[in-house]
Length: 88
Image 1 (cartoon, rainbow, N blue to C red):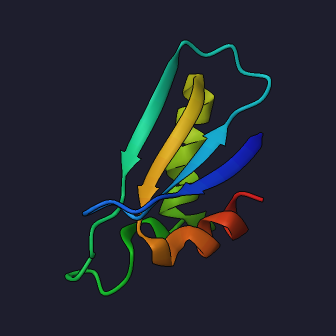
Image 2: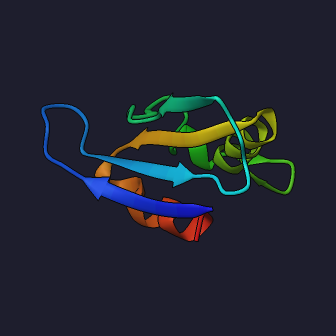
């Protein structure tokens, strides 16, 4: 789909990554909050392995299959490059 990122400065949220799905006649959008520190996991939860890809990719794919027209992942600045790589 048509993907882009927008970075803005706020007190808590440093970035979001928006995925606009193509060929979807969905009637809903999704916001995935993922800007936490993940201190207990030792790595960002979205990047945890799930089957043969990441938890983030699995989550986006499931919402896409359910018909989501737009998926917004709220992330920290350090995950912007990784999300760009995953969803190019």
